[in-house]
Length: 354
Image (tube, rainbow, N blue to C red; front, side, top):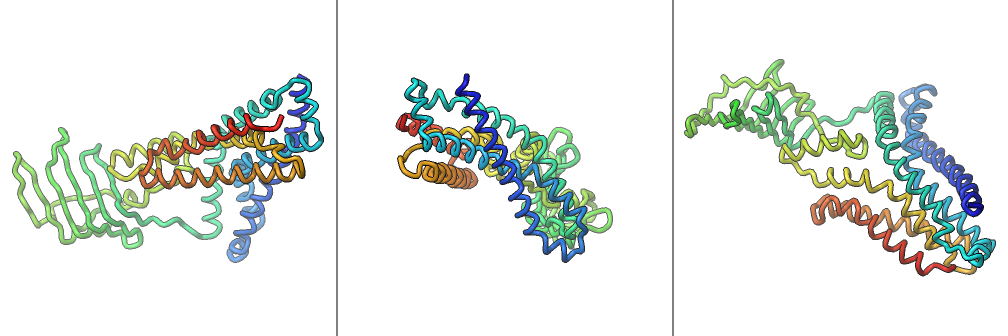
Protein backbone atom coordinates (compact mmCIF):
# COMPACT_ATOMS: atom_id res chain seq x y z
CA UNK A 1 0.00 0.00 0.00
CA UNK A 2 2.90 2.35 0.80
CA UNK A 3 4.37 1.77 -2.66
CA UNK A 4 1.01 2.49 -4.32
CA UNK A 5 0.49 5.77 -2.44
CA UNK A 6 4.08 6.84 -3.12
CA UNK A 7 3.84 6.11 -6.85
CA UNK A 8 0.40 7.70 -7.30
CA UNK A 9 1.40 10.81 -5.39
CA UNK A 10 4.41 11.41 -7.60
CA UNK A 11 2.57 10.52 -10.80
CA UNK A 12 -0.43 12.81 -10.31
CA UNK A 13 1.74 15.85 -9.69
CA UNK A 14 3.73 15.36 -12.89
CA UNK A 15 0.68 14.32 -14.94
CA UNK A 16 -1.46 17.32 -13.99
CA UNK A 17 1.45 19.71 -14.50
CA UNK A 18 2.16 18.27 -17.95
CA UNK A 19 -1.55 18.33 -18.85
CA UNK A 20 -1.78 22.02 -17.95
CA UNK A 21 1.40 22.84 -19.89
CA UNK A 22 0.46 20.98 -23.07
CA UNK A 23 -3.13 22.31 -23.00
CA UNK A 24 -1.99 25.92 -22.68
CA UNK A 25 0.64 25.40 -25.38
CA UNK A 26 -1.96 24.09 -27.86
CA UNK A 27 -4.37 26.93 -27.02
CA UNK A 28 -1.63 29.49 -27.63
CA UNK A 29 -0.65 27.84 -30.92
CA UNK A 30 -4.28 27.97 -32.10
CA UNK A 31 -4.55 31.61 -31.00
CA UNK A 32 -1.37 32.79 -32.71
CA UNK A 33 -2.18 30.88 -35.92
CA UNK A 34 -5.39 32.93 -36.29
CA UNK A 35 -4.30 36.15 -34.58
CA UNK A 36 -3.52 38.02 -37.81
CA UNK A 37 -6.93 37.07 -39.19
CA UNK A 38 -8.63 38.41 -36.06
CA UNK A 39 -6.69 41.65 -36.41
CA UNK A 40 -7.64 41.94 -40.09
CA UNK A 41 -11.33 41.55 -39.16
CA UNK A 42 -11.05 43.98 -36.21
CA UNK A 43 -12.28 41.36 -33.76
CA UNK A 44 -12.30 42.51 -30.14
CA UNK A 45 -10.57 40.66 -27.28
CA UNK A 46 -13.80 39.31 -25.73
CA UNK A 47 -14.88 37.03 -28.63
CA UNK A 48 -11.26 35.91 -29.16
CA UNK A 49 -11.05 34.87 -25.51
CA UNK A 50 -14.35 32.97 -25.87
CA UNK A 51 -13.00 31.08 -28.90
CA UNK A 52 -9.87 30.13 -26.96
CA UNK A 53 -11.98 29.05 -23.99
CA UNK A 54 -14.13 26.80 -26.19
CA UNK A 55 -10.94 25.24 -27.58
CA UNK A 56 -9.66 24.21 -24.12
CA UNK A 57 -11.55 20.85 -23.99
CA UNK A 58 -10.22 19.89 -27.44
CA UNK A 59 -6.70 20.89 -26.42
CA UNK A 60 -7.07 18.79 -23.26
CA UNK A 61 -8.15 15.82 -25.39
CA UNK A 62 -4.99 16.18 -27.48
CA UNK A 63 -2.87 16.63 -24.35
CA UNK A 64 -4.06 13.61 -22.35
CA UNK A 65 -1.81 11.05 -24.16
CA UNK A 66 1.21 13.38 -24.04
CA UNK A 67 0.70 14.20 -20.37
CA UNK A 68 0.22 10.61 -19.22
CA UNK A 69 3.19 9.47 -21.34
CA UNK A 70 5.41 12.14 -19.82
CA UNK A 71 4.14 11.44 -16.31
CA UNK A 72 4.66 7.68 -16.41
CA UNK A 73 7.97 7.80 -18.29
CA UNK A 74 9.41 10.55 -16.10
CA UNK A 75 8.44 8.94 -12.79
CA UNK A 76 9.71 5.46 -13.68
CA UNK A 77 12.90 6.77 -15.27
CA UNK A 78 13.58 8.98 -12.27
CA UNK A 79 13.09 6.00 -9.94
CA UNK A 80 15.52 3.99 -12.07
CA UNK A 81 18.05 6.82 -12.14
CA UNK A 82 17.97 7.21 -8.34
CA UNK A 83 18.17 3.41 -7.83
CA UNK A 84 14.91 3.46 -5.89
CA UNK A 85 13.48 0.73 -8.12
CA UNK A 86 16.52 -1.42 -7.41
CA UNK A 87 15.62 -1.36 -3.73
CA UNK A 88 11.99 -2.14 -4.54
CA UNK A 89 12.97 -5.11 -6.72
CA UNK A 90 15.30 -6.34 -3.99
CA UNK A 91 12.35 -6.41 -1.59
CA UNK A 92 10.58 -8.92 -3.85
CA UNK A 93 8.19 -6.56 -5.67
CA UNK A 94 8.16 -7.07 -9.45
CA UNK A 95 8.07 -4.22 -11.96
CA UNK A 96 4.58 -5.19 -13.12
CA UNK A 97 3.23 -5.32 -9.59
CA UNK A 98 4.81 -1.99 -8.69
CA UNK A 99 3.53 -0.34 -11.89
CA UNK A 100 0.04 -1.83 -11.75
CA UNK A 101 -1.49 1.35 -10.22
CA UNK A 102 -0.34 3.31 -13.31
CA UNK A 103 -2.01 0.78 -15.61
CA UNK A 104 -5.24 0.95 -13.61
CA UNK A 105 -5.18 4.76 -13.63
CA UNK A 106 -4.56 4.84 -17.39
CA UNK A 107 -7.43 2.40 -18.03
CA UNK A 108 -9.82 4.50 -15.95
CA UNK A 109 -8.66 7.70 -17.64
CA UNK A 110 -9.13 6.02 -21.04
CA UNK A 111 -12.79 5.28 -20.28
CA UNK A 112 -13.23 8.80 -18.95
CA UNK A 113 -11.56 10.24 -22.04
CA UNK A 114 -14.09 8.48 -24.29
CA UNK A 115 -17.05 10.08 -22.51
CA UNK A 116 -15.20 13.39 -22.18
CA UNK A 117 -14.66 13.50 -25.95
CA UNK A 118 -18.21 12.45 -26.77
CA UNK A 119 -20.09 14.66 -24.28
CA UNK A 120 -17.86 17.73 -23.88
CA UNK A 121 -15.21 18.00 -26.60
CA UNK A 122 -17.55 17.47 -29.57
CA UNK A 123 -20.13 20.18 -28.73
CA UNK A 124 -17.59 22.76 -27.52
CA UNK A 125 -15.34 22.24 -30.57
CA UNK A 126 -18.36 22.63 -32.86
CA UNK A 127 -19.30 25.88 -31.10
CA UNK A 128 -15.71 27.06 -31.39
CA UNK A 129 -15.61 26.47 -35.14
CA UNK A 130 -18.97 28.16 -35.71
CA UNK A 131 -18.00 31.21 -33.66
CA UNK A 132 -14.60 31.42 -35.32
CA UNK A 133 -16.13 31.21 -38.81
CA UNK A 134 -18.58 33.97 -37.89
CA UNK A 135 -15.86 36.25 -36.52
CA UNK A 136 -13.60 35.69 -39.53
CA UNK A 137 -16.40 35.84 -42.09
CA UNK A 138 -15.67 32.40 -43.50
CA UNK A 139 -18.30 29.80 -44.28
CA UNK A 140 -17.79 26.14 -45.23
CA UNK A 141 -18.31 25.20 -48.86
CA UNK A 142 -21.79 23.89 -49.58
CA UNK A 143 -21.09 22.40 -53.01
CA UNK A 144 -21.58 18.65 -53.12
CA UNK A 145 -20.62 15.75 -55.36
CA UNK A 146 -22.61 12.52 -55.66
CA UNK A 147 -25.45 14.09 -53.70
CA UNK A 148 -28.20 11.66 -52.71
CA UNK A 149 -31.50 12.79 -51.17
CA UNK A 150 -34.29 10.47 -50.04
CA UNK A 151 -37.65 12.16 -49.41
CA UNK A 152 -41.42 11.56 -49.38
CA UNK A 153 -40.97 8.70 -46.96
CA UNK A 154 -38.52 6.98 -49.26
CA UNK A 155 -40.77 7.11 -52.31
CA UNK A 156 -38.63 9.69 -54.14
CA UNK A 157 -34.86 9.45 -54.50
CA UNK A 158 -32.70 12.19 -56.02
CA UNK A 159 -29.16 11.65 -57.16
CA UNK A 160 -26.95 14.35 -58.68
CA UNK A 161 -23.38 14.05 -59.88
CA UNK A 162 -22.69 17.63 -58.75
CA UNK A 163 -24.52 20.43 -56.97
CA UNK A 164 -23.43 24.07 -57.37
CA UNK A 165 -24.66 25.93 -54.27
CA UNK A 166 -23.90 29.39 -55.67
CA UNK A 167 -25.87 28.87 -58.90
CA UNK A 168 -28.30 26.38 -57.34
CA UNK A 169 -27.85 23.96 -60.21
CA UNK A 170 -27.85 20.16 -60.17
CA UNK A 171 -25.77 18.40 -62.83
CA UNK A 172 -26.51 14.92 -64.22
CA UNK A 173 -29.67 14.35 -62.22
CA UNK A 174 -31.56 11.10 -61.64
CA UNK A 175 -34.94 11.06 -59.90
CA UNK A 176 -36.56 7.72 -59.06
CA UNK A 177 -40.22 7.71 -58.00
CA UNK A 178 -41.91 4.76 -56.28
CA UNK A 179 -45.45 3.95 -55.20
CA UNK A 180 -46.71 2.87 -51.78
CA UNK A 181 -45.50 -0.68 -52.45
CA UNK A 182 -41.99 0.56 -53.32
CA UNK A 183 -42.48 -0.31 -57.00
CA UNK A 184 -40.70 2.02 -59.41
CA UNK A 185 -43.18 4.21 -61.30
CA UNK A 186 -40.81 6.56 -63.13
CA UNK A 187 -37.17 7.41 -63.64
CA UNK A 188 -36.01 10.86 -64.71
CA UNK A 189 -32.61 11.53 -66.20
CA UNK A 190 -31.57 15.11 -66.94
CA UNK A 191 -28.34 16.87 -67.79
CA UNK A 192 -29.10 19.63 -65.29
CA UNK A 193 -31.79 21.17 -63.15
CA UNK A 194 -32.03 24.84 -62.12
CA UNK A 195 -33.85 25.96 -58.97
CA UNK A 196 -36.52 28.58 -59.68
CA UNK A 197 -38.28 29.94 -56.59
CA UNK A 198 -40.21 26.82 -55.61
CA UNK A 199 -39.30 24.06 -58.09
CA UNK A 200 -36.54 22.59 -60.23
CA UNK A 201 -36.55 23.44 -63.95
CA UNK A 202 -35.41 20.39 -65.92
CA UNK A 203 -32.98 20.88 -68.81
CA UNK A 204 -32.45 18.19 -71.45
CA UNK A 205 -34.38 15.57 -69.52
CA UNK A 206 -35.84 12.18 -70.36
CA UNK A 207 -38.63 10.58 -68.33
CA UNK A 208 -39.12 6.81 -68.26
CA UNK A 209 -42.61 5.83 -67.10
CA UNK A 210 -43.04 2.32 -65.76
CA UNK A 211 -46.56 0.88 -65.84
CA UNK A 212 -47.74 -2.75 -65.92
CA UNK A 213 -44.20 -3.89 -66.58
CA UNK A 214 -43.86 -1.65 -69.63
CA UNK A 215 -41.52 1.31 -70.00
CA UNK A 216 -42.47 4.34 -72.07
CA UNK A 217 -40.15 7.19 -72.91
CA UNK A 218 -41.21 10.82 -72.65
CA UNK A 219 -39.03 13.85 -73.42
CA UNK A 220 -41.60 16.34 -72.13
CA UNK A 221 -40.87 16.78 -68.42
CA UNK A 222 -42.85 19.97 -67.90
CA UNK A 223 -45.60 18.14 -66.02
CA UNK A 224 -43.12 16.72 -63.50
CA UNK A 225 -43.06 18.63 -60.21
CA UNK A 226 -39.77 18.50 -58.31
CA UNK A 227 -39.92 20.67 -55.20
CA UNK A 228 -37.22 19.32 -52.90
CA UNK A 229 -35.42 22.48 -51.64
CA UNK A 230 -31.81 23.06 -52.70
CA UNK A 231 -30.63 23.00 -49.06
CA UNK A 232 -31.19 19.25 -49.11
CA UNK A 233 -28.43 18.86 -51.71
CA UNK A 234 -25.83 20.91 -49.91
CA UNK A 235 -22.76 19.01 -48.81
CA UNK A 236 -23.73 16.53 -46.13
CA UNK A 237 -20.19 15.24 -45.62
CA UNK A 238 -19.29 15.58 -41.97
CA UNK A 239 -16.19 14.80 -40.00
CA UNK A 240 -16.89 11.75 -37.87
CA UNK A 241 -14.30 12.95 -35.37
CA UNK A 242 -16.33 16.14 -34.78
CA UNK A 243 -19.69 14.51 -34.01
CA UNK A 244 -20.97 12.31 -31.21
CA UNK A 245 -20.97 8.52 -31.44
CA UNK A 246 -24.75 8.51 -31.92
CA UNK A 247 -24.67 11.06 -34.75
CA UNK A 248 -21.74 9.26 -36.38
CA UNK A 249 -23.67 5.99 -36.40
CA UNK A 250 -26.69 7.68 -38.02
CA UNK A 251 -24.47 9.26 -40.67
CA UNK A 252 -22.83 5.92 -41.51
CA UNK A 253 -26.25 4.24 -41.74
CA UNK A 254 -27.37 7.00 -44.11
CA UNK A 255 -24.35 6.51 -46.40
CA UNK A 256 -24.88 2.76 -46.35
CA UNK A 257 -28.56 3.11 -47.33
CA UNK A 258 -27.71 5.65 -50.02
CA UNK A 259 -25.09 3.37 -51.57
CA UNK A 260 -22.27 5.84 -50.86
CA UNK A 261 -18.75 4.85 -49.73
CA UNK A 262 -18.65 4.54 -45.97
CA UNK A 263 -15.49 2.54 -45.20
CA UNK A 264 -13.53 5.63 -44.14
CA UNK A 265 -16.35 6.92 -41.95
CA UNK A 266 -16.79 3.51 -40.35
CA UNK A 267 -13.07 3.18 -39.56
CA UNK A 268 -13.07 6.63 -37.92
CA UNK A 269 -16.19 5.59 -35.98
CA UNK A 270 -14.35 2.54 -34.61
CA UNK A 271 -11.36 4.77 -33.88
CA UNK A 272 -13.53 6.73 -31.44
CA UNK A 273 -13.56 3.59 -29.29
CA UNK A 274 -9.96 2.50 -29.87
CA UNK A 275 -8.20 5.85 -29.53
CA UNK A 276 -8.71 6.20 -25.73
CA UNK A 277 -6.68 2.99 -25.43
CA UNK A 278 -3.64 5.13 -26.28
CA UNK A 279 -3.52 6.17 -22.61
CA UNK A 280 -3.13 2.55 -21.50
CA UNK A 281 -0.65 1.79 -24.28
CA UNK A 282 1.72 4.70 -23.60
CA UNK A 283 1.84 3.77 -19.90
CA UNK A 284 2.45 0.12 -20.80
CA UNK A 285 5.23 1.19 -23.16
CA UNK A 286 6.73 3.46 -20.52
CA UNK A 287 6.91 0.57 -18.06
CA UNK A 288 8.64 -1.68 -20.60
CA UNK A 289 11.04 0.93 -22.00
CA UNK A 290 12.09 2.77 -18.85
CA UNK A 291 15.51 1.87 -17.47
CA UNK A 292 16.76 0.19 -20.65
CA UNK A 293 20.19 1.83 -20.28
CA UNK A 294 22.48 2.39 -17.31
CA UNK A 295 23.69 5.82 -18.45
CA UNK A 296 21.48 8.88 -18.90
CA UNK A 297 18.54 6.76 -17.77
CA UNK A 298 16.05 9.62 -17.56
CA UNK A 299 16.82 11.17 -20.95
CA UNK A 300 17.11 7.90 -22.88
CA UNK A 301 13.94 6.46 -21.35
CA UNK A 302 11.94 9.57 -22.22
CA UNK A 303 13.24 9.52 -25.79
CA UNK A 304 12.44 5.82 -26.19
CA UNK A 305 8.89 6.33 -24.89
CA UNK A 306 8.28 9.32 -27.16
CA UNK A 307 9.65 7.37 -30.13
CA UNK A 308 7.35 4.44 -29.37
CA UNK A 309 4.34 6.77 -29.11
CA UNK A 310 5.22 8.35 -32.46
CA UNK A 311 5.49 4.86 -33.96
CA UNK A 312 1.97 4.11 -32.68
CA UNK A 313 0.55 7.21 -34.36
CA UNK A 314 2.36 6.39 -37.62
CA UNK A 315 1.04 2.81 -37.61
CA UNK A 316 -2.46 4.07 -36.87
CA UNK A 317 -2.21 6.51 -39.77
CA UNK A 318 -1.17 3.70 -42.11
CA UNK A 319 -3.90 1.29 -40.99
CA UNK A 320 -6.56 4.02 -41.23
CA UNK A 321 -5.47 4.75 -44.81
CA UNK A 322 -5.64 1.05 -45.65
CA UNK A 323 -9.13 0.92 -44.18
CA UNK A 324 -10.14 4.05 -46.10
CA UNK A 325 -9.24 2.41 -49.42
CA UNK A 326 -10.79 -0.89 -48.23
CA UNK A 327 -7.59 -2.94 -48.28
CA UNK A 328 -8.40 -4.03 -44.73
CA UNK A 329 -11.69 -4.00 -42.78
CA UNK A 330 -12.55 -0.75 -40.94
CA UNK A 331 -12.48 -2.58 -37.61
CA UNK A 332 -8.92 -3.73 -38.27
CA UNK A 333 -7.87 -0.24 -39.31
CA UNK A 334 -8.92 1.15 -35.94
CA UNK A 335 -7.86 -1.65 -33.60
CA UNK A 336 -4.79 -3.20 -35.27
CA UNK A 337 -2.32 -0.64 -33.77
CA UNK A 338 -3.80 -1.22 -30.30
CA UNK A 339 -3.39 -5.00 -30.51
CA UNK A 340 0.11 -4.73 -32.01
CA UNK A 341 1.44 -2.37 -29.35
CA UNK A 342 -0.14 -4.29 -26.48
CA UNK A 343 1.77 -7.36 -27.70
CA UNK A 344 4.97 -5.30 -28.04
CA UNK A 345 4.47 -3.88 -24.55
CA UNK A 346 4.07 -7.36 -23.08
CA UNK A 347 7.31 -8.43 -24.76
CA UNK A 348 9.16 -5.35 -23.50
CA UNK A 349 7.88 -5.93 -20.00
CA UNK A 350 9.13 -9.54 -20.00
CA UNK A 351 12.60 -8.42 -21.10
CA UNK A 352 12.79 -5.31 -18.90
CA UNK A 353 15.58 -4.86 -16.35
CA UNK A 354 14.39 -5.74 -12.84
